Image 1: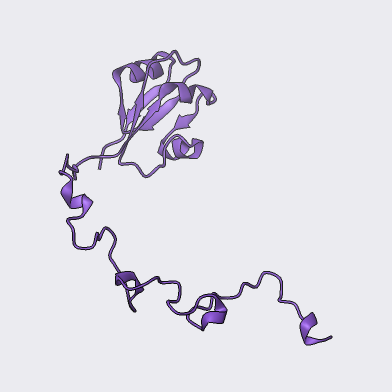
Image 2: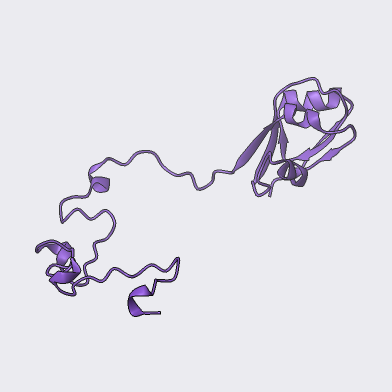
Length: 148
């Protein structure tokens, strides 16, 4: 084995060496161009900085507001419950397992109106009038949890 026969291990990538002479291809300005803020050592410009001019985010008007008292409500249609077997107890954990909600929402509400073919016991925070009627008409129970 000779030196010229040696090969780099597969998957090993060499680091880009800059500022090490004209022969490297990255000499002189070290790929940073000529002068200016971006060519200086320790350059760092915060996100949104536009060289001292008024940034776009400050030039545009503010609009709307963020309601800190808003509650996350997961609305689930009654038709998704039709797939379940008769006599099943449906709670938030079961709905999360089915992928209908995350299970971390502050409030889960059953909406919609459909004729269910079999009775179910549904235990969530809220129901629409139509959803409650649909569940009870099929012989099931619609029980409400108290909101925290």
